[in-house]
Image 1 (cartoon, one colour):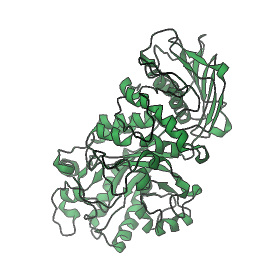
Image 2 (cartoon, helix red, strand yellow):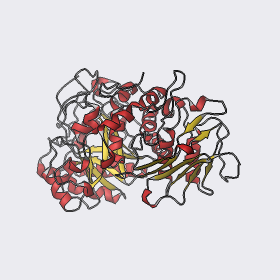
Image 3 (cartoon, one colour):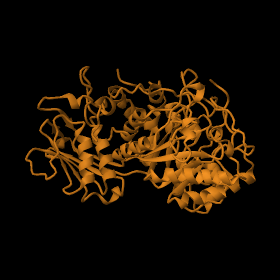
Image 4 (cartoon, one colour):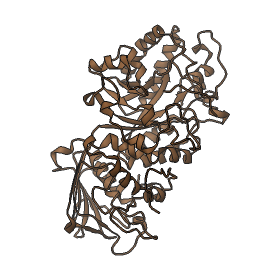
Length: 525
């Protein structure tokens, strides 16, 4: 994905998912930072906000959560919300007399579509309406940002005041993604779940997991057990590596789904495959397995295009992966295959692309897959820095949709500045304004608004070893890219965003996220 140069059921822990502390317009006490005072002071910025100062709602320990009668999905969203409120209870029938927070799958504004929501705050209660549970969940994320950071611990009669008015909101793009590379450095299940919680609050709805690369194979494949037994035994720098069993992966998929996030797994091929080649000699053209690799160079490995065993291997891997992946996409990589000739690359893809469809999935891959003949449903992912690719433009002209993630704007592993303690800089230094101040519809030549399916923020882990590293490099750039994916271009403005982003500081601190205090933002405190 990048030319390298050598370098070295409820939320179970409030510390990971506490609601937002805000500042704008409110006075924050040392004991309890105040909530956002204005309906529009949230991230991502909503489509339409209509304040009503006379309609402020007082949240108390007696406030119940009423969910759409008969809807299990709405009830699940209600249970999730209950994890952030003191002494809250679910009132599915809506019969209680106390003021309520209602989550309803009916009568939403027609503009909200499949993923949007309508939020109404009045003295009598708070109502979130949507057409789907995904929309309700997004509305809950907005509601959380109107609550003070310590709302879960408060026991008094007046817990919080939610600003009155209404919000009508829906996303610019239906596909809003973050990517975590667990191949270069392995990150265990609990760390991935924590990342899921952290990205969900900004309305990210997809997690792309990069599961295999030269340095490690991270997912159990039962028909090819040495992939993890041997190929997963190390990582960049020579650490012990690790892998997920299929049961652990399924647990991650279910956990993500409970946060309305779909996992898209990636097995990169035909390049970035040294861990597989080291595990099984027969996958090499000369029948000789190379040693395990713990560096960060790219482009030197390739599956053997001419061998039948290669396609049996790929078929087996994709089959087992598809069986434990409820989402519609499998990511097959396809980037930086410098050890594969152009002819062999097209031959390989010509055989592999039908295998994805054979297992009932749609294909996505890095934009190099546009060299091949793609099915109409394929989604190439643009990662370049030049803003153009002739093969991609040709496919787009024929109707192909693109996922946009230019490395010089969205790669969360790039340093903020020359003093950032981890990360790389081959795509450039990416401060917060650089991550925010661009438009996907003009980022890639020949790829206009109608050809974009969404935006992704990838995190490569050559130097990212710990959860603290993930926090530092993701925040606050991840919220910036999340707003690009959700909010309308006309509603986005760097000056207003940096003010709203500053309000996220106390929230991130309350969650234990060690974020980068960018000098471009006037953080409180």
